[in-house]
Image 1: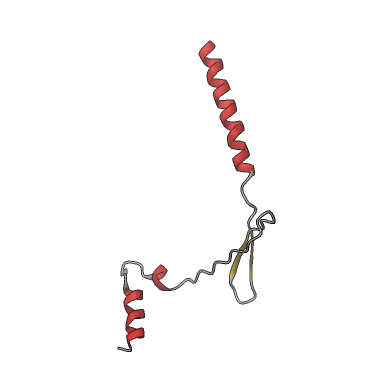
Image 2: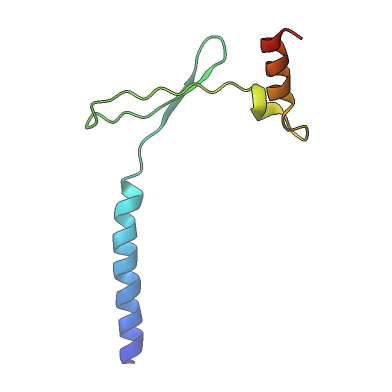
Length: 81
């Protein structure tokens, strides 16, 4: 019976600690611009910094089974071939 109480305490404190991490997850705001661009925004006023990332649904992200095609094509365009 003593072991069962010990296990209950371990589970209780584990979930108590993990609950703090879950509540610390940032709130992500999403919207779409008039021309269809999806925007994801996370406000963090405690950090005096702006981080902007722009991801295009093109290039090597779209190579699929033919990896390297985009890089190869880009190099051909740069060389003028």
